[in-house]
Length: 640
Ligand code: C2E
Ligand code: MG
Ligand code: MG
Image (cartoon, rainbow, N blue to C red; front, side, top):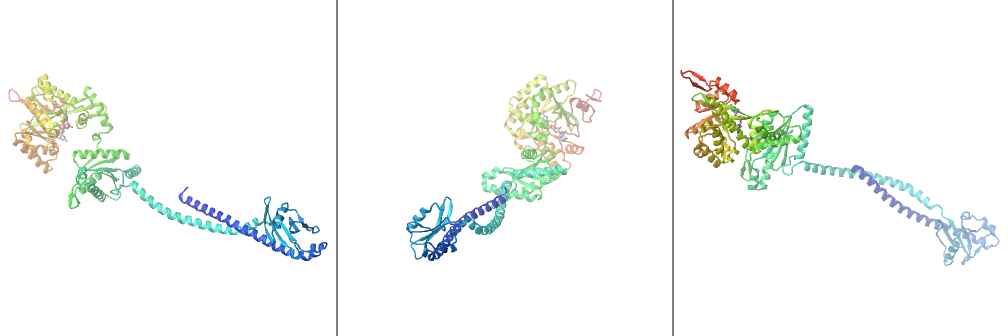
């Protein structure tokens, strides 16, 4: 039952109860006074009769006719109409007397001691009687009359009834209005309180932004709209980088202030139709309805720019960096749960790479079904011969010839098709499979190199090692054993290790590199320029070449900064006596530029994509950068 009705019903019930109690009280009072009045009236009448009797009794007996001629009220219905002496002896009235009241004796005995006229009420066998007893003037006789009470109750009720009805009407009317007014006031108060509680349940206390529950709700609503109107949406998860340090060093009070400022800035940067929520800690979420990839990207850039501005606190200014993960509907999920989860994965990726924002990609997702499937199948893939090596030429720019190739692993998955190393090598690293993979790559590359040599194709093969390979201190001995078994000179193999892998454990890298170098193996630092190595270490490392990371080379023709970086790396490498490989040469301009800047070797799609061994042989035969030797009469011979 609604509160309003309940209140109304209880008000009316209380009113009726009060009315009933008062009604009963009023009835009793009215009843008593009516009985009293009746007794008094009877006494007066009996007194009057007695007065009239005086003269009649003077002639008694036998002048009863006179008495009969008197108008004697009460005579007709009286139960007792007696003239009697003080001790209760009745005087015959010639048939006028009535003596039908069985309780007469008790009454007369009671009257024996009363020298006064008296009257009252008697209850006999549940019937109410009114009696009156008076002295007949001039005699010592009494006239006592007992008469059934007239229906006092009925009369009382009748007289009270109307009044009660009117009072009840007024009381109920007042009760109803009272209830209505009070319910209206209560409802208003409750509504206010409800609204406050609902707000509290759906908003974050600190920033007053929507919380996770409300965000879920908004996502669900937005998804409904998307289904109906074919729209898309973007969901951001944002996390402040190193916020814990702010809390730990400056205290929670400052931390809270920073979070409030960040919340305000995010809200101010976006439209009113977007939802900004705080998920807890230093994590925020943004829901942008009707947004495509481009919109999401520009929003993320705007947010990063806004949040990049230092926050002033107590005379200090604190700069907080943010990482944003983006998931889009419908590409990255069809429900709130998966969109949030994927935006979270993208956010961690952005944090790891320091890229500011990152759009979800399934292959980065450690929880994606595809990833889990691949992890499960990778071990068997190696044994089942599903891995293959492709080879990408590294062209010597001075000679315009290819003397080196880089072995790049691929997974020919029976159902998923070709899978690239950037997807499964990290999986192998994280799941203890990298040693087996490296082992397979080393054996296959060495075997291929031997095979080519046997057919007169003299190519040095570069093999990539993972950071995890550094954990194995037996690696140099192991490689030596493989080379020995294949009877391949160590100089035919190059080992590539990324700069960041090297910097992750420099001492170990130095140790392993020194032992590999001592064996005569060529060493290369891959993806150079991204791993923050210092010049002093570089000089001490026995590496032969630095491979400039392709991100600098790919657009160096357009991006002057990258061109400057490439030039600096080339100069630096040459100054410390190292060769330089420019990888990621995708077009003629890039090739000309790296040549002009003095790179020793170029590698990239413009020259050739990675190819299977057989394809590479064809390429070596056909390409202007292919492998040729001078024939006995000075003519150019194709080796393949
Ligand atoms: P990486 O060693 O730096 O290899 C170069 C990557 O750049 C290769 O990608 C190659 O296909 C790509 N690339 C070459 N030229 C161009 C170009 O002009 N433009 C662009 N956009 N890309 C170019 P891939 O084969 O996908 O390999 C990616 C990475 O996977 C490698 O980077 C390497 O770090 C790792 N990797 C590959 N094979 C192995 C392996 O056998 N063992 C280990 N541990 N890692 C491997
Ligand atoms: Mg490499
Ligand atoms: Mg590289």
